[in-house]
Image (cartoon, rainbow, N blue to C red):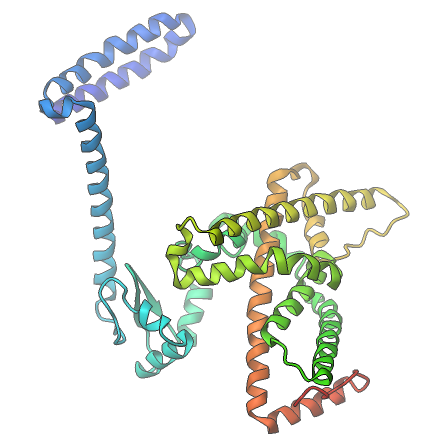
Length: 402
């Protein structure tokens, strides 16, 4: 019965669309009358055959919500059955718990070391890791990594829900999170700024940053106090990236990003392991969103101001038209006709992406490097000797090695 009535309804809609488009131009009242006359009978017939209970607004609302929930549950079940079937022959490490999967096991120690041990036990073949209600494949074979990132990169979509989820506020819809045509457009625009010769500009900036942190270490040794190396490296890498991308001085970077940027990164890192923090109405969550709005406002205003300055300089025949930093290199490839609020937001998101992708990873690598050198004095001595050869005039070369 419902199938027949649905066909009548679709037929009425087709007639309504065909006749109604012409009538709109002639007479609005006739159009509305036609709409009522075509649609009312089948809808009324359907309503008459509904159970009495469902005619009550409250019950109808509950039935609709139940139908939507059932549909969502069936879609989730269908998706996960397909995933389970596809991964059924791949090994899973021990320590898996119902619902939580391997999440609690990883949270109970060093995730990298635990994952490395699991991969080693599987002879570095693909293994399946479960996180709450999601499953992922861990690969170690360089050929498989090349398959995903190079040969078949269009086949594998980016996991914005789980992997990138806690960091989307920072990454936005930049090149790291985008895919398809949008990713190709952004990559083409950014590739203009990231040529090989950018490395020539990076080395002096990094050298000056290394000299600054060396002086801090020398002062700490002289005063007999300790310093948090990881935090110092985070500030240092932010200064390097800020100078290269935004043309900021170290003082400007240190005055802005430790307060506006690092607290957001720290909270995002916590949300990886404690995802419920995202939804709790806590003072920490309030400060997080307040700081995020302040960071977005600052960067967007900064980009707008720099665009105005850059375009003014291009209009001045006596001024240098050479881009001063990576941001201006990107702006040089943009069409002024496309400039506006959306373009500024796009550049803002890319700046946040560069900050996150560059500073946290580099700071972690530098921290672990210093730790490993402290555990292997013979290797540290070789590093000191090489540093003295490459930078013979460096202030305090090797002074803080102990």
